[in-house]
Image (cartoon, rainbow, N blue to C red; front, side):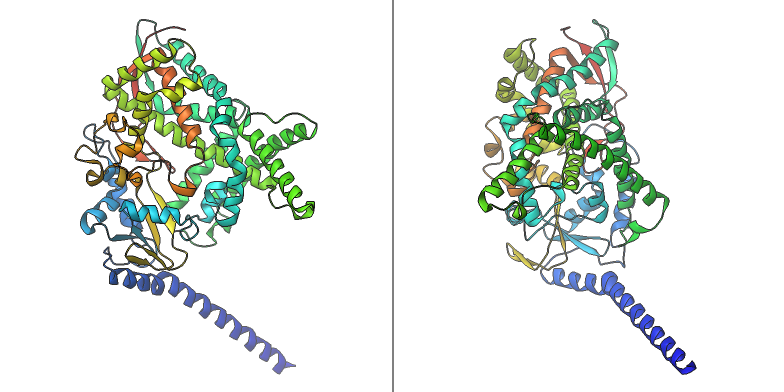
Length: 531
């Protein structure tokens, strides 16, 4: 009996040793052997970058340099802010050129700066999937995060809700949100005077309000709790992403993980109630509303019916989104729809404050089209000067400043071979600011360059400008964002002129996935007309 116990103990000890050695070996492969193998492969092809440093790579140096460059505002107003927000990346490209790489922890990231190579990568969406960590997926796992067949399926369901004809129906929601914001300014601005307004906070709330009305048919006040939870969750995610992600760490019972779990549960409960009420109304014969949620649920239902007609068997239906999937898309509406448009609007107002000649040209065009009346959809589409201005702002201050992809298997791009396991970075803001591609005035605000459209502005090389992405995965909400921005800008210019406040400091910085003013955007508003 004693011998049997000893034998069992020996077996258990042996198994523990094998498991420990196996885990240790996998850790060594992850933190050292695989990174060094990828480094050798890249260097053989002429790629250059700093040598790999165990586990952290360049992340500590990147974070240190960003802390230094963003510790104070820029000395003077300039659109040449890339060295401020991407000091390490800027240095790498400057020192090593087109074939350079850096280390994101133990993973090498290749910088792709040639438009023809960017085009090739963005067309091969199944070979170059998006990079998504468990942290990002927990924040939102909607369309932007999906890949493969699942992405194609949900993109097909969502496309009808973002057609221009559907967005036109949401224009009253855009107007109502903008009007509330402007009325708030008018209450505190003397008819013959002026006032200082911190624009970023107002425009951030405006975009949130627009999403609530246009996507869910409720006002910002009614959806405030969802926004509060999303903002807190975003803050938690940003903090977690500032250090190297350790697989499985999100399951540890830390204070941050516990708070995150509570946020997710409360937010999903609120959204579930909203969706179920709408579904019940539709089941009782009520027509789908012309907001994004109504159009999504209608498209979801029609997808099921179409599949039934094709296959004649309800059990085989493939196109119906689950409650969880609809919730994730609702979260994506909030996250993706809010920051990008508020970023576009705030930099548009800042640049028009700096370049008042373009502010006047835009205002003249708006008054010629609408007078003092409410902007209408056909007129907004025809605003040429406003369109030129918005495109130039998107070029200089792209809300989404870079795109990242991973190499799922060995891929040839141009004359280079990228091994499986590396990441690629498509630095939108670097391309948009390139003097080689845009000329010596690349960093100057000159909307005139878009006077004949994007194709002429890019000299028929459309990969020089991809503010909303490009190819099959181009942003599904680009028309929504542009129409919201045009409505807001038209209404503001009808009521106010504006200039930079003496207290304004220029400090573009990176928020969660978007470019924003680090210290706010203080402008002086002057009343023009009382409607």
